[in-house]
View 1 (tube, rainbow, N blue to C red):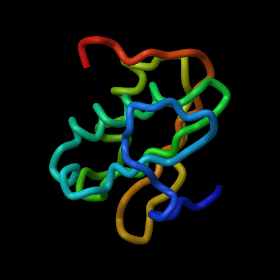
View 2: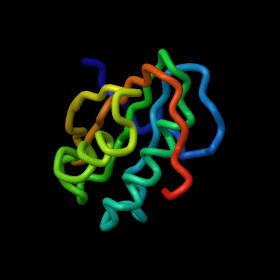
View 3: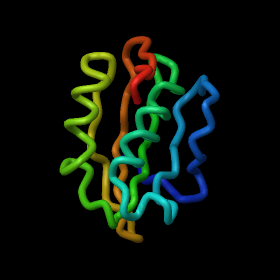
Length: 110
């Protein structure tokens, strides 16, 4: 699998991406807030066009994304996307690749 560099990540912008991209969820504000990671990860997924993927680069202090992110993805995104754990970065963060397969809109209640 391909590595993701910190230099290749973007912030959540609320603008659609017409290609695959990476979002930086490793900034200090994410360190003790898995809830913020989930919220911004869902925003990033909603900014991704079907047929492409977004790499969610999450803060190491939140732990492995399986512990807090994967169930949230199942609940919110369902069959519109599939995801895979890619790797742990050298800095301790984690990369999860979310492939958007169908149009998906961020629910109003998130």
